[in-house]
Image 1 (cartoon, rainbow, N blue to C red):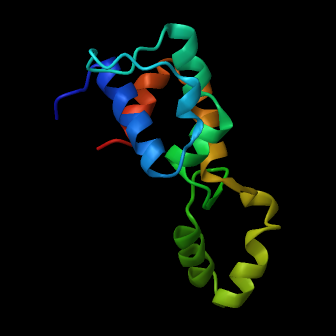
Image 2 (image 1 turned 90 degrees about the vertical axis):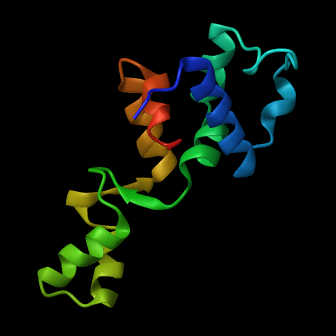
Length: 125
């Protein structure tokens, strides 16, 4: 599959965040004649690393800090013999699988990533 260029990734990520309820766009100056939002390097970093943007882009569902989704966790618990109710009780307190919101998990990974724009691209397909 063809890779998007960085301006396209940024534009699509911002568009997706707006569709998901992100409302802080008013702080960004747009250049209508450009294909992409007219953002400088520092503005792009401020946007993509902000908590509000990450919440809108990645979502607020809970995920294990190892990347396991809740459904995968339930499946693992069922295989281990736990009922769904027992698994739900364990979800928040399981020390091996401490949970966090999806946005926090992906924002942390994006910050640590060598190319954060490329990391964003995975969520835009």
